Length: 93
Image (cartoon, rainbow, N blue to C red; front, side, top):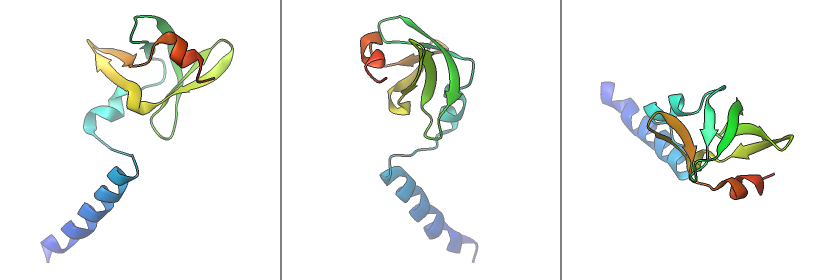
């Protein structure tokens, strides 16, 4: 009976993946409040003000809160980097 939960867990995880959500161990520590976010072209965008429920990094840029999608974020040499250029992030406002 121990293996009877496996299909339920596998189904739940596949539904999360299909919905675009993923929960990798490294993702949990990737985005954190206070971490500095840098654009792919090296521009410092600011400190993460808040982490959105979907893992997006929310930064204050130009006096407005901008949500940088989690799908664009990665860790490069210990820094939080978005694959977007600064002007692309500005257009998210």
